[in-house]
Structures are given as C-alpha cells and as structure tokens.
Amino acid sequence: MMNRLLFLTVWLVIGVALRAGEVNGAARLIEINGAIGPSTAGYVSRAIKMAGSEEARCLVILLDTPGGLLDSTKQIVQSFYASKVPVVVYVAPSGANAGSAGCFITLAADVAVMAPNTSIGAAHPVELGGAPGGGKDKGDDIMTKKLENFAVSSIEAIAEKRGRNVEWAKSAVRDSASITAEKALELKVIDLIAHDVPDLLRRLDGREVGGRVLRTADARVERIPMVARERVFQTLWRPEVVFILMLVAIYGIIGELSNPGAVLPGVVGVIALILALYMSSVLPVNIAGAALILLAVGLFITDVFAPSHGVLTIGGVAAFFLGSLLLFERAGPAFRLSLTMIVPATIITALFFLFVVGAGLRAQRLPRRAGSETMIGQVVQALTPIDAQRGMVFVEGETWSARSDVPIDSGQPVEIIGRQGLTLNVKVRT
Image 1 (tube, rainbow, N blue to C red):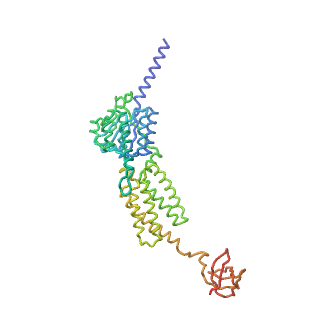
Image 2 (image 1 turned 135 degrees about the vertical axis):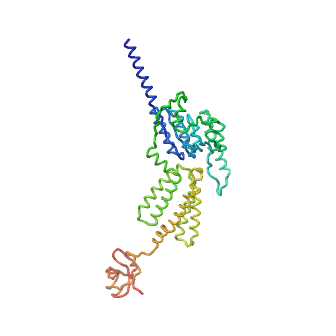
Image 3 (image 1 turned 180 degrees about the vertical axis):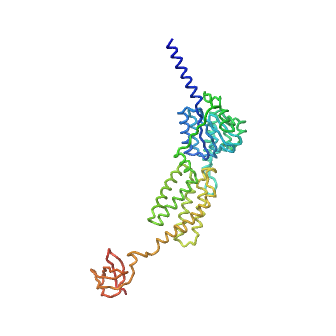
C-alpha cells in the first residue's frame, strides 16, 4: 500500500512540474530586418539551438527583408528543418516585405504568418552579370537558366514539404510574382494573418505543429538579441561598408607610398584591404567593376607624371564611376550601391589623387634642399693643396677633407663631384 502511495505521489509531482514548465515556458523571438547574409544565417541557427535547448514553446522570427544571398538562405532553411521547436516566421510590421530570399524563408517555416498590409514574393534569382556592353552571350543565358531552375526546384520542394501553394511558389521565382498578406492567405501561401505579436500568440494557441500542440496564449515573449560578433559582421558585410573599406585601403596604401615614413596610412590601408578582401569573398563582387576601379587608380597616378593636361584624370573619373556602379551588379537591386554614395566617392577620390597623392609624388621628385647631397656641384676654394691622399676645403661653414686625382694648389677653385664618407671628391674648376 505504501509503495502504491509513493508511486502515485511521484507521478503527481512529475505531472505538476511538467504542467508548471508548460505554463511558464517562453516563446523566444528574434528580429531580422535587412538583407539576408552569413551573419543572419548564423544568428538564426544559434537562436534555434538556444530555443531547442530551453524547450521554448516556439521561436518567432520577425521578418522584414528585401532579399539576400542564396547560400545564406539555404542554411536558414536547413536550420528550420533541423529545429526541435516550432519555427514561426512572422512578416511584420505593416509595410514589411518578405522579398526574394525572404519568400523562401517564410515558406520554409513551420507556421507562416504575415501582418496586414505586408507583401511576399519576387523571388526570381539575380542574374550572374552580362556580357561586355550590357549584352548577354549564350553562356550567360545558360547560367541564368540553370540558376532559375535551381531556385524553382528549391522553392517547390519547400512548398511541398510545408503543404503550401506550390504553383504560386514557382511563379514567385519564374515570374517574380508578389502578393499581399490577404491574397497570400487566400491562396494558402501562408497560414495566418496577425496584427501584432500578442495577436500572433493567441492565434497560434492550440495549433498542432509536427505532432506538438502549441500552447502560446499565455506565453511570455523573450527576445534573443544578436551577440557583438553577429552585429559586427552584419554591419561589415554590407556592400556600402565593403566599398568604403576599399576606398580606405586605396587611400591608405597609396598615401603611404607617396609619403614614405608616415606609417599610419599604410597600416590602416592594409587592415582595410584585408577586411575588404574577406568580405568580398562573401559578397558577389563583379570582377569587371573591381578592374575598372583599379584602372581608375592607375590613370590618376599616371596623370600626376604625364603631361596629359587632365585627360587621364577625366578617364579615371569615368572608370571609377562605372566600376562603382558595376561592383555589386551581380548582388541584385537590394545590394547595389546608390548614386548618393558613388558620386561623392568618385569626386573625393579624384581630388585625393590630384592634390594629396600628386603633391606627395611631386615632392619626391624635387631636388634635395638639405643634407650632404646638396654640396654636390658646389664650387669652393681649396684651403690646402689637394692630391689623391689629402687636402682640405671649406663648405657651408665647415671644413671637410678632400681628395683629387689631379693635384690642386691651395686657393684654386674646385668643384665637389662626390663624397665618400667624410671625404669629398673634387676636381679643378675650369
């Protein structure tokens, strides 16, 4: 009898503990606002693991994005599939957009929700660039078709796995279809429309996801913020930052070469160059754009020495401007540099090379005005007889040892033709 009572008591305690855990469980929330990149994928993966280890009721991802990189999107989708807790993607607030990569991410969630007056779609993959002159060759068309087919098959597999509208998902890639939240609910692209997070949790309550019934009506919401490393890389990998790093690298390295010994510009330039190269390995940089920028730098430097009357500088300005436009041409409209950044950068770079670098390089070509080298070519009088072994001359307030291959009498004018240590080589002034 005592054993039965003990058994029932243990089970009662376990049941109460489990119920208390369910009641007190939290819904974890993260916010993605901006382009999808490597740091975003890492942030989502970490949040999913944290929510799983804490046995959170669900993970809500507040989403507003114009799109992002395909590799990062793929990593996020894989993280969704491996998640131990239900993942809810909530496109919000009103006016938000799940464009391009955001469309893939929303469809891949366990529960896809949108706020009123939001949109989703336009998931056509970005082309990989065109042929010179803006045209396309056969290779470009083939690559574009391959990329499109891959994106179609990917979003089709996602929609089938989550039981969503496959035909519309494919049209979002092929035709860049985009719809509102209300239309998305009607076409069964998403599961719910919610006005805010509390409304979202109320609507999720009682919904079955993967054999698990969500109990979210009374759940408290706890945010998972980005750690410092994720915030830094989320900022650094932006095209604008990479472009600025490239400019700093150019200014620093060229500034050091034109003014040797400054040290600081060279150090800053090398650090910026390393960071720019690292971030360029993540972002789809257009080689043609980078080549045009390097050509512009070469034209600017050449114009300092060549009597081109500014023609090379004009060419450099044109090359720099076009290179900046093309630099992230492959990354899509959401990632391209704006004219408000390109135009000032072009003007500042041209002025930098014309005045700062030009002044430094011209200064290096001027004749020396101090030091022993300034004595070469001077004509002075011999203080004593001068031969191949010994002699003395008076130069700039100092007495110097002198030697000459031809004997010179005291008082004769001599020309300084060289120096060996503390001895001057002289010859008779004719």
